[in-house]
Amino acid sequence: MFDRLRKALHLPGSPNAARPVSNQEVVRWAATQRLAVVPQAVDGHFDLGGDLNGHPWRLECGNPTRDYVRSLELRGRADLGVDPDAAVMVLNRPLQESLEGNAYNAITDTLQTTVNASLPEEMRWLAMFEEVTWPGLPASFRQHFAVVAERIETAQRWIHAPVVSQLLNIVEGEGGAVRAQSPLLLMLVRGKVYLRMEHTQRSLTEIAQATQLLLAAAQGALHNLPPPAAAGGPTEDAEDPQ
Image 1 (cartoon, rainbow, N blue to C red):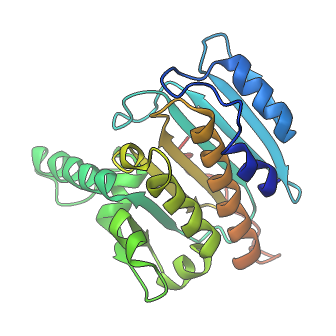
Image 2 (image 1 turned 30 degrees about the horizontal axis):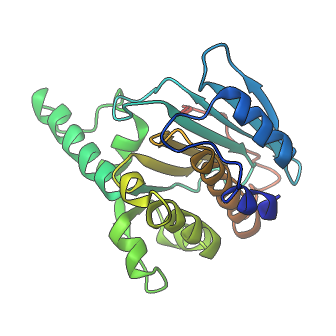
């Protein structure tokens, strides 16, 4: 699957980047990747899905569910059943700065001394957890992205080379200068991987990149993080960032 998706990033028949990709083009592309796709009534809105080693994943495109996304939003989720206590978030620097400013304003405007539970989960994490880094992270990655985690050991195991490579490809590849300024968020929480990014360029390349990133992050969690103890089992979702 990964080889097919890599080739999809350079399809000779890709539509003109100057216009948004149509649902018909997404359907044709998904067929070449052997991915299930359900186009919605509104052009540009669709649902992609598949299976990764027996675990379902989904990537949908639609109206934004966060106010920091200004155009269409690509939202991904992979249900993996890995350690439910693992909590790691990766976000690009412009989004980090924006969310930190919004969180500060929300707290000071209401004269609160604690984090408001009504704030989006990603904003609460920035207030509760520290940014972490380690020598193995490339300087270019640290320039573009922040990693926030409850435990650095979990972050080190999950943010492995394929995830780093996919993230850097998005912000340093073709169209990367624009993408680097657009919201991008990757979370590992409650045994699932979540992706949220602005569909800035409305291209097949961007859809393929989002799919690759979601799958690389899911694969990394499956391979590098232990499953929950058999006795305890996974916890119920307290909140779904979707």
